[in-house]
Structures are given as C-alpha cells and as structure tokens.
Length: 556
View 1 (cartoon, rainbow, N blue to C red):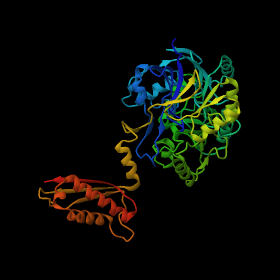
View 2 (cartoon, helix red, strand yellow):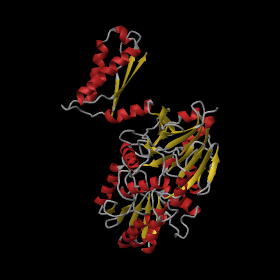
View 3 (cartoon, rainbow, N blue to C red):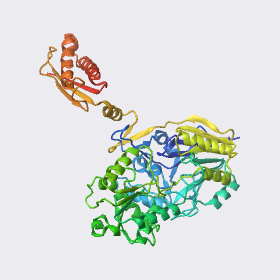
View 4 (cartoon, rainbow, N blue to C red):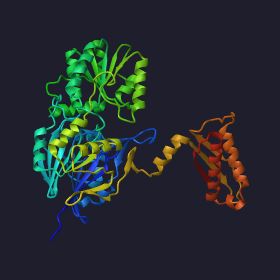
C-alpha cells in the first residue's frame, strides 16, 4: 500500500527577518516532491555593513536542483520584498508565474524600466480566482494591505489545506481595493485548515491597525491648512495613499506634481488598472515652478532617505525642477524601515535647518501600517481555526510574540522555524524534519555574489579599516630594483604624534625586506606575505586598526 503524500513547508527567506520573502510548499515523499513557490522578494543593503550592495536576494540553490519538480511561482502581491528578486533569479528557474492583474502590470512596468531585463511571462489570474497547479489548488483570497490586490493563498492538497496569509490587515474602509474577505476566510475555516502561515510584523503591537480612511482625513486637514508649498512623500506602491493625497490636494485647490520615476510608474499602472479612476490628472515635474506656492503639491519618492530619490535631492537643493523654501511643509506619509533611520534623519534635519516644516507619524496620523496587530491576529485565528500555526514575515521577537498569541488562542500546534527549515504539516506529527540549503545573494552592480564572495568581505573590511597597497620590484638576485611604492586608502594621514603613517609604512617595508634572508627575498609569495604581515602590524600600532593589505612583487 502506497504511503500518503506528505505536505511540507520551507521558508528560504523572510523568517527571522523582514524582507526577502520566499516560501515553498512540497507535496510527496522524501524521495520526490512537487514544489510550489510563493513570492520571490528582496531586502535592501545596509551601507554601514554591506557597502556597495544594492539588494539582498534569497539563495535559490535548492530550487535550482529541484527545478524539474518546481511547478510554479505564485505572487501574493507586488511589494519589492515579495517580488523584487524575480528579474535576477527567474532565469535560473524559468518557472511559470501567476499573479493578479495589478501585480502583473506593475511587474511588467518594472521590467520595462530595467536595463536588459529578460522576457518573463506572467499568467494573469482574476482577483478571487482558484487555479490548479499540479497537485495544488490555489485560491487567491483578497486581503487589505498597503498595495492593491494583496492576497492570502488558500493552498489545497490531498494532505490538507494551508492558508498562507501574505501581508494583510483588517481594514473595513480601505481607500481603494477590497477589504479583507472575512466571509471567504470563515468559509475556508469551516472546510478545515490544517496550517496557517501568517504575517507576524505587528505581533508586538496591541489593538488594531487604524484605517487608511483615517489617514486620508488627517492628510486632507494638513494640506488644507498649509500656506506655502506642500510636498508629501510615501511608499510609491501605496496607491490608496496616493489617492488620499490627490483628494486632499483637490479639496485644497492644489495641482499634484509627481516627482520620481518609481512614483510615475505606479501612477501609470494604477490608472491602467482602474485604481485611480475619477482621480484628477497629475502634472509632470517640469510644470512645478509654473504654479503659485499655495496651488501646488509635490508627490515625491524618497520616504526612506534614498540618496538619489526626489526628496533627498530637493532637501539638498540640487533637484533641477523642484525647490522648497522657508515656511513650506513636507509630510512624511510613511514609516521609517529599520536600518534607514540615519538616512531619513539626515533629510529631516536638512529640511528643518532650512526653515521647512516637517510632519511625521510621530505627531500626526499620516501613516498606518499595512500589517495586523494582535487583535487582528486573534480574529484571523478565530476565522480559520488552524490545527497548526507557523509565524512568518518577522524578526525573532515578532515570531515569538505571534507564537505565544497563537498558543493563548488555542491553536493545537505552533511551530517556530527558521529559514531553511523543512516543516512537515502532515500526515502524522507536525514539526521540523530537515534543513534545506539556504542563504543570501548580494546584488553588486550587475552581478550576484554569495555571502562569502571576496569582494563583499573585503569591501566590508575596507570600509572599517582602509587599505594599503605595496609594490616591490625584485631582481633575480633578491635585491630591490627600485624604491617600493606605497599607497594608503582610507587610512589617517598622521599618527597621534603627528608622524606621517605613509612614512612609517615605507620604513616598515624597507626594514622587513632587509631583514629577510636572500632566499626568502627571491620567493615572491614568501616576500609578499612577510611584508603584508609587517605592514598590518605597523598600521595597527599607529592607528589601532589593521587595514586590508595587498602586496605585489614583480621580478625583473
């Protein structure tokens, strides 16, 4: 008698972190499983710890090996942390992609704006549809979030049903789009849900997330009361917020000028898909200066302090078309993503120092989260009644709090797992049964590098302790053919006594060379290593830090 198929789940990104979401569901046995991937996102590089790294992507080595068994990639919604890695990683998989209309359209626009993007076909699925993908039946269940057409996925299999919530909240009055479909979720719960894999982002926050409608009212009042120019920055993908800002501008008799390519792209897609029907036309940046200060509103990218985005350029007074002056008002209709605090703070301080009024969510209801707080998490559990709950989409604290809440709510089995853990949902006792290959890839310019890549490691070290480059020309008799060349990068010019560190390094190179036996001088590798060690030690004595040191030995 054949053993029944096992239903398994493995996060390859997005657990123990916020961003880089990639989940896979497997059906079969340990010898062969069919796989369904959900989302393929990025997180963003941190200049302090990962200098020069633009994006962080999940390592998909496991999926590449299982490519023949990988049936599809299904997208819950079109935020970068859920679909931002597709352009770079899809060519390694060439798997069918399924998405609802807005997500598909925004992805197409993203591809158009990306140099040399591959041709990636997307199967467009109606909102609320059910589709069969091999042994998986996938239903797209509308949920409220900070972007149109966010979906929970009800994944039905012969071994049971999983509800993968994606990003969601309960908002009965969203400015655009559908509210979270409580009726359908309750019906799925009555059918029987084996496991719920759920958003944990706000599991540390009590109560409920406020509605987008409340933010819209606050924005309308702030725009109406402003006397000078108004600039509003928000996440470009938040179409509901864009509509709220446009409505506020219309009530205050202001023209909306869109500043920033990402914002222009989302506005275009939102109009094409009907989400901005009835909203006035926006103006191009070149018209900004044509309007009186009390008749214009700039809708800007750059809410996260991105140095090349519109708001940073405006704050630095180097935007070619847009300026702000003393008495103007800037509204940050966003929250600062952890890691971006310094960059955002620099922009805010720069604006305030120019006499510009800055309004944030610290003092006004100008932003709400798109993720559920604790009361909403309890409601989802009561609707769906899962036998198993896996906290996802959060850092360790968020996962732990979600898990504790689920246990208090009476969920029979709660499994806290990490990236790479293979979790068996059933049949039999659920739990972690294996670990799959997982990790991170770094987008470095046009290239994808592993965590262990030399360039990534060395650049991190150089950003902390600089670099020293030494070139030696040696005769075949082991004598110097010319004076050594020494270059220091990112190393202080003088030590605490005022002596040139450059001179100390040069003297160390010479004394090290002269102290070596002639046989070691004639061995380029041995000579280079001796000089390297001595130079690093000398700089450490002068500065307290050991730089990266490269020594090149030429035999002449």
